[in-house]
Amino acid sequence: MNRLTFTVFGLLFAVLLCLPANAQTFTTLNDPLARSVGTFAMGISGNNVVGYYYNSSARLNGFLYNGSTYTTLNDPLSINGTQAIGISGNNIVGVYTDSSGNWQGFFYNGSTYTTLDDPLGVEGTYATGISGNNIVGFYFDSSDDYHGFLYNGSTYTTLDDPLGVKGTQPWGMSGNNIVGGYTDSSGKDNGFLYNGSSYTTLNDPLGVHGTFAYGIDGNNVVGDYEDSSYENHGFIYNISTNTYMTFDDPLGGTGTCANGISGDSAVGWYWDSSNNGHSFVATITPEPSTFALLTIGAIGLAAYAWRKRRLKKQAIAFLTQPTTPEESPAILSFPSRSFEAKRRAA
View 1 (cartoon, one colour):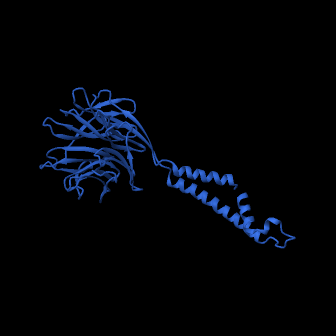
View 2 (view 1 turned 180 degrees about the horizontal axis):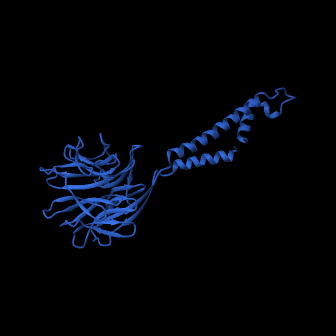
């Protein structure tokens, strides 16, 4: 391995280490039926995005966007509006307002709407996330306090973060993991991750005034936090590495909220300078894998070790050179300089 090869490996390793942790590409989404106040993307599954918008009559309407076409979603029992919030495959969950003005959860399978009402939700039920046959959300009890729930198709199970003395709201689900937020005794919002047995608080270190988690896919969680100036910023949290990355749409003049994630795509909305909401889909390019970095690093170390062995052999060869003046070249009369000259020339 010559010096050029060694140098190339070194430069390649350095370039990989200097790559940005994630590259973000944002695409704005605006339902064509939405009035200026905005379009709000809430969930994503594959190429499908769901959310809601305000029409010209200021009525809330759900939408499904498949990458090229917007389809309005309105529960037939809705009187004052529908919000599509979570999606998994072809199944969508959300909320609508009934004739009494209460919010009711719904499940939509692409053709039929089914109302979801937690029996403890005297003052209303929100369905917010879905994964397979399981649905999460929250309900308002008779005291108008909110509590999370998990619904498996037949049974509602209450979910309350023990630190959420002022309420718990699950929003997203992936496999057995559920994310959301709770309000603690001081009134501050905190994110949480629930794995089926224990709750872990998720707080972005930059979220001085609160953090809320909304979506999850595999090891990645998205949500938003409020900084010291009370401005919202989206974040992505990696469970396996326990790291947070800020996630801001560059057009978000007054804040960004990240709500759903599927693979390397995330959705949410941002507020422009006129305080109108616009949705986005963002593609996140992951950082180089740990394996790739270790492989390049190992090659570099192997090259370094090979070079070190070569120098050692050169040193041994030098020490065994004849030492009488008549047998030795003049350059060897200064061993240290000779060895340095050989090292530089190698």
